[in-house]
Image 1 (cartoon, helix red, strand yellow):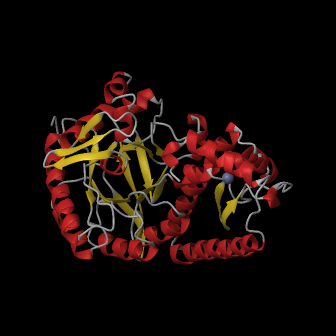
Image 2 (cartoon, helix red, strand yellow):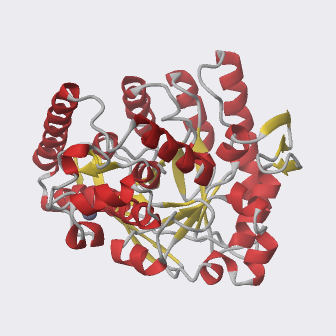
Length: 411
Ligand SMILES: [Zn+2]
């Protein structure tokens, strides 16, 4: 490697209980934490232009190594100036290692000491990804923050399998550190271990012994349930150094974000904003509003009166209900835009509360209001469980179209 690894100079600026507000530097600007990172799977946050994204003001954007490796390929991205030049996005970017995607999307052929071979979910071609490949691909993509290649387990899994994945992740972490040739990217290690607290401790000990710029917590929000998530997270963040940035991968529901910030997490990413937006599920300060429901057909109010996004400032619930109901392209944009803006602003509000010294009261009030809103919707929807616009057949057709357009949404 050319010089010393990039130093993000992570600083804790305020603390309340285990929660903390911090800041760090990257070659493309400073990052203030805690922060929610929108996901641009294929170097695009689905449905949004750069100008729309810029107005949302995310601290960091995430892009997926596995998807970009398949299309257009890292050589093309590198030839066009890396992700920053290619996507013309001039603020900080993080790429994941491809580990999660390769284990969840690919049709597994073999796992060995040097990596994983899968058949591509696109065309069945064999794809090989390991710590060396993931490091080289991420160097070509050129993000500011890059991730070590890890092995994820699908839960539930036998303890021996989770332990093997933890130990292999640690060996791969060392290979990633040694394989680096760039000195302008910060490399983060990923703590695995499922919901087994002893294995989490083992993984945290293995990885914090290595000189990473920060630590991610992987392998959660994969169906273990909210209690197990919370317990595992509480135990794991306690084992990570206070002086390094912490990133909880794949968690983005508003109440989970409140809990995780309280436990000392600094960075988050999740596709839940854009994906739920496409399904007509909109986050608001009062819980999730289902815009396709018939009660919004003549509602002139904004999605969320307290949201400052373009959708909430410029459009009514009635118009959004119509766009969603007839499956207009603009619906994907406006609904994804609001959800992305909401999650970024939601975590930023928690940061502000930390800096103001009001985190406990503010976060409790935010969570209580969100829960009360959810309870009201649930009661309302119980009176009219269908509540949908148009016939059952029209709704089924709309759902089928969405699945064809966004196959990665799943069922
Ligand atoms: Zn909004």
